[in-house]
Image (cartoon, rainbow over all chains, first blue to last red; front, side, top):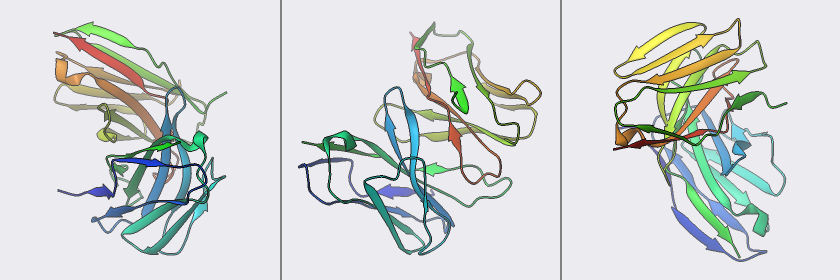
Length: 114
Length: 110
């Protein structure tokens, strides 16, 4: 069964901490994505990557950075966590192209910043 | 105006009813259309995937795309309590970056 695995289900961090969210996929997908999901706002794209060491900003990149050193791993970094970054974070991957079958999502990381 | 509009509901139906969900969109270049189901505290999972216009059926689920009206629908027949979830529509020009609706929360009452 193909999988996208997010390293933590729940995290509690303090304001100002540097936070790392890890995501690993085992499908040899080219594309990987980080979203945050908030009630009433839906899924908002933070960053995405279409190849190793390549990254592009999504719709809400402020306060975040990413790293993709290996094809299977895409990390989201909160440089200095703030309370408004409390959210559900979802990682996804896809092969892209026609009939790719859309995204495969991880189970999510619920981050609380106190 | 949002690129993809979806009524957040909530929608509550009795077991066995037909659930009807829909999304409208503004970008005429969208060609790939998807529906995801998300259970509470889980990540979304792909339910239906269609390219261009037309209908697609998979068991109790039917997806319809009307590109001329910029409107997509998902129908769930013989709904079950296990269908209680949030349903997200998603669409894309190139099957690379997806634009999502806000999601509709559905409860099927036993």
